Image (cartoon, rainbow, N blue to C red; front, side, top):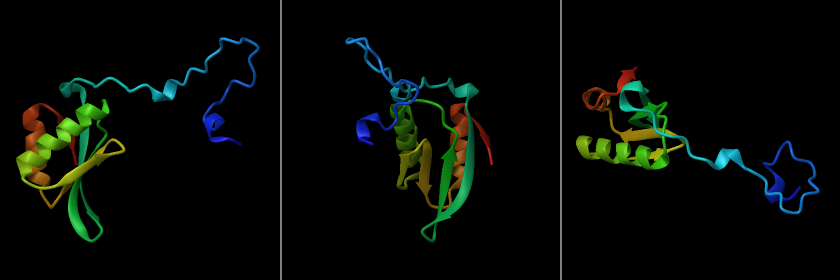
Length: 109
């Protein structure tokens, strides 16, 4: 099977020459207001080093990146944002959690 038809389900054949397949998965979701977001802050060990992982962020990739950048700047450490999670290097669980709560996010963990 070719890669261009790999994710298309539900449409077998169309006789309409102007038909364009509507891929609804490619649309980015809107960012929830800060007060409605509930973020899970957890300590994890990745590659033998401690880190803090923030999960369950609902929003666009740009908003995720901006939150990641502000967290890294506040804590003075490195990190990354991928797959809807923010990874902050180091064991800074309390600092990250207090920063998020100060911004108005609800946190758990």
